[in-house]
Image (cartoon, rainbow, N blue to C red; front, top):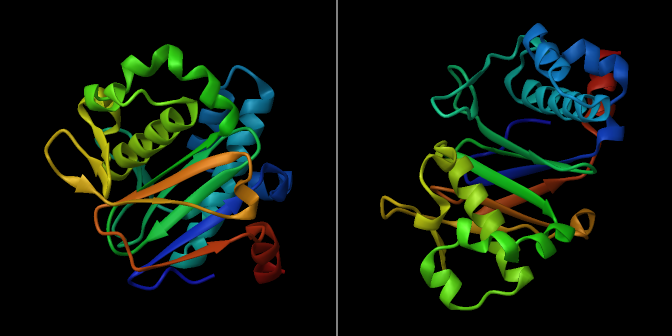
Length: 225
């Protein structure tokens, strides 16, 4: 799968079962394996490893590198990036699904959350909602939209929550960050996302989007066989 064209967002749907263990071992670096080993529970380590391997395969298709040789590094606030390459990417996942977003137009961020999480948010709304958002009396679903939108924004900007999420506000045309910049926001719709809510954020939102729901391991195996 080639890299996205200018003006296009490329979204990849990843399921942990899509990546067999032999490909995980083939794709992960020593640093990746060390990080996986730091997880307390084996199932968390396995899931993270499969998502990481899938991400490496997707990026390798675009750059021509091998998955293990991809020069991924973490920026100032921990956002993964490719060294010396114009391809921007981001990943979000839960227990059952992951989404990877790619763009050559500038930084992007994505957040994916299970809709089941919505019921837990009212108890902590004051920790992530702007006063104007709280004043509107948001219900559970609205709080989940606010949370995923802000997560996508801070992942796109690369700052993480170094600034309080209460200083960031979801507005009609995007997310207004603490510095006064509005980041365009897009809610993702796809049958595979039933039971989930996902937002993607970009400083320059491309005009087109393609959502790919094909196991990358199938393409990778065919290309290397």
